[in-house]
Image (tube, rainbow, N blue to C red; front, side, top):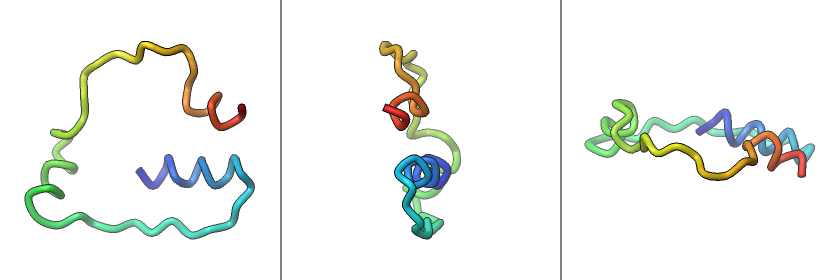
Length: 54
């Protein structure tokens, strides 16, 4: 998530710090294990980088 935030800030030419916080407990373990992601394929044609440029 930090990488996404950093790219967003760069695209808008903002100089801000991105805080990397470790999420504790059950939710944090689920994040780190990748259980909160999807296997769905994107339906759109625009990438995150293209969106940031637009």
